[in-house]
Length: 326
Image 1 (tube, helix red, strand yellow):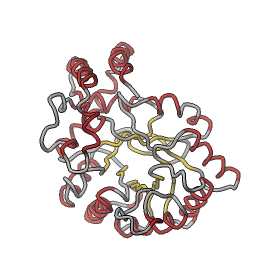
Image 2 (spheres, helix red, strand yellow):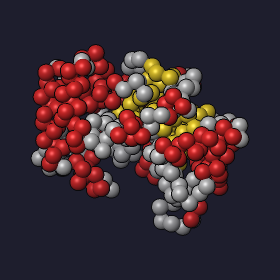
Image 3 (cartoon, one colour):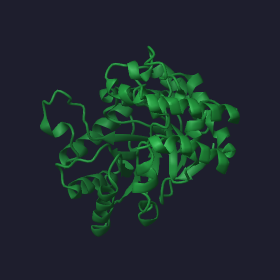
Image 4 (tube, one colour):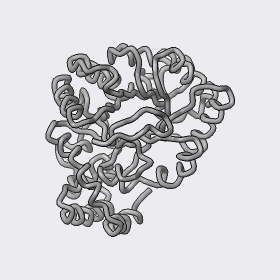
């Protein structure tokens, strides 16, 4: 495992990391989470990603129980959470969902700390932009979170380049803690934001990236070419919004072409896709997901593919994917 700095910060993250979206609590209980996190840690993974909204807080509980059982030195691992959607999905409190206002953020961090059993969270993200709250209010609240010792670094997820720059400029003007990282989707079919929209931000403000969905929610495994198989992510309750993209005929035809390249490289398509995301030097860490130790180990083995990306191989991959990329 190699390690990369998170943007211009001094923090180093493993180039592959382990996330909990969809899996923890829904597919992975505390015992299996502990087993997978231990296997990842033994392989050199030091970053474990989570969010308040994952399984409505239960994902944080599962990860927290695993961390407590594993008894790792606190300096040896990095954990994250993300705030925006909240836990009050029934709409009982207008200030507890779909917001980044000061009241919500100030209390949300306390909830995550309690669920995870930690004194502080390393990385805290604003999970989506909030057009109803002034960015200045959000920046002050996130900076205060760090000043109070409840988080070490803050960032954003799926914000536009203009929104990121506005937040950074506000922090710069008021001498506040600046956003350090962004967490965007990045894979062979979803790449314009990382490769084009954010291009100036890497040098201008030192933006780091912890990217998610390197397998395009499973599309880049090839499992959706004949529909949605039982037990797959697309078949899970609440994941129906993914089905249209997963069963897209043009992209699944491209998957077949990509699989041929992966075979030539002596790897699985999923491994080639993960390695491709990690090949981008702007990416600090690629967040992978798994519902079994075997799947986790296969994903981590993607690192052996990195040296196989010759200019010719990358060109062939682009010729297949770029016409279908967003």
